[in-house]
Amino acid sequence: MEKFEPIKTIKTDTPTVVMLSHVQYVKDIKSAILATDLIVNKWGFKDYRLHIYGDMERAAGHSTECQELIASKGLGEACVLKGLGNASLVLQDAWLFLNSSVSEGLPLAMGEAALTGAPVVCTDVGASYCVVTDKSTGKQFSEVVPPNDSESLARAQINILALLGQWADQAGDAPGFQAPILSYPNPTPEEVKAISARMYEKKEYRRKLGMRGRANVQKNFSADRYLREHEQMLWIGKYRSTSYRTAIRARNTTMGGPGIYPFSGSAGPSRNNSSTWLGGPGSTAEKKSFGISIQNMPRTLSAPRLTPDRWSSAPSSRASSIWKVKETVNY
Image (cartoon, rainbow, N blue to C red):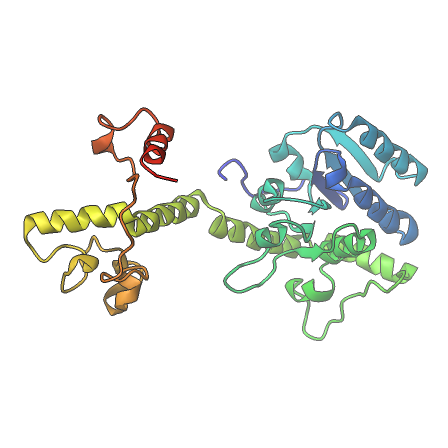
């Protein structure tokens, strides 16, 4: 995350949208091109520019189709396939970041763009919604639209660039001021002129919206949170392990004491007990034992878990121990 710092000054003078997408079918570059056709040719926003950065050789045939579509729509200046580029550099041109994919996992490029303070428009696929939404409040910091819908993609971009519609309250307008409206199906020339002027006027407020998206990414996708949640998952697995619980009971029996864990008979929780952070002293017995009662403990596994103290005496592989078990079973 340290690589992507907030951009202090945007280097482009006209409304510029940046995509970081390899030119292939799953990224649906054609919908982004058709959205550009609507914005520039049908609606008349002549200042709009779309710069697409990504590998054009992965699907050379699809790249050719995209170039032909751009030429057929007369978008040679408004929409440009730039090829590969350095993300931290090309995002310095972005008034807005666009992702038009029809399928995603966790789109890292969206997170990188948000970290630079660029507002985002994306399709509702994979975990894209999670990147632009605060999971604790459900509040969005960018526009999310259905996939494979060029008109929704076009309207969302104009709404964010000019802070219209649901984003008007982020624009710092005077009380009672009526923001322009992007009429359906096509805005009037007067509306286009007013909205275009508003794009330039609201740079500062659009940037504030983008910085809120940056804070959301830092909160929900930091390395510290990733490590902390994985550590918690491993501890839960350890405390639910039958072999671990059996070993603790055996140790407590050998020591002759009441035990150090609640499932071995202790009177109260200890600092080593996982219930300390899974409910605390007020937790119920069921919570402390993760739903497993002492009177009805699962049977001991025939092939116990391999632990460091058993490495020297362990069989050469888990497969060999499985075959030994099979040999003792009568079918």
